[in-house]
Length: 170
Image 1 (tube, helix red, strand yellow):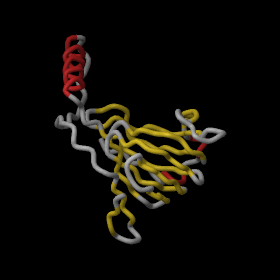
Image 2 (cartoon, rainbow, N blue to C red):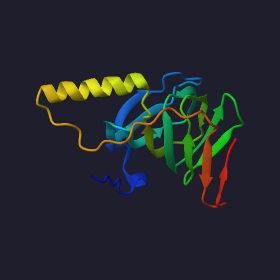
Image 3 (tube, helix red, strand yellow):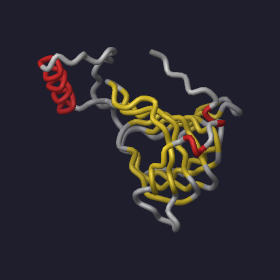
């Protein structure tokens, strides 16, 4: 089944769900989050949706890989082990798993994102047990399975800027 988010930049913030403040604020008041998930925990994808944040600064670790396209606002990600990355509406970024750093949101920012789930051995075993248990209970199996993939080495974030037509790294 395909999922189309029509005109994600035009969806009123009031139509998104409140997610509360950021967890590790470095400014006051803490940045507030709203969003909407369109996919939640299917094999290979932890979640996919729209995420919006008000101005602020906070510490963040992106535990899993993330692919995001920014559709509104401006922000800066300062990786713990790299140069600052300035992001603005129209930019697309991929962040490797365990990307640690500081987010600085300069103006309300909105992105469409996909959190990629590359399961560990434990998660694969847990998923297999869940599937067996669901089968035992007579519950339908999940429709689409994606191949299990081992974790990949952590690499620096990559950002695509269509205006310049080139990839940029830290």
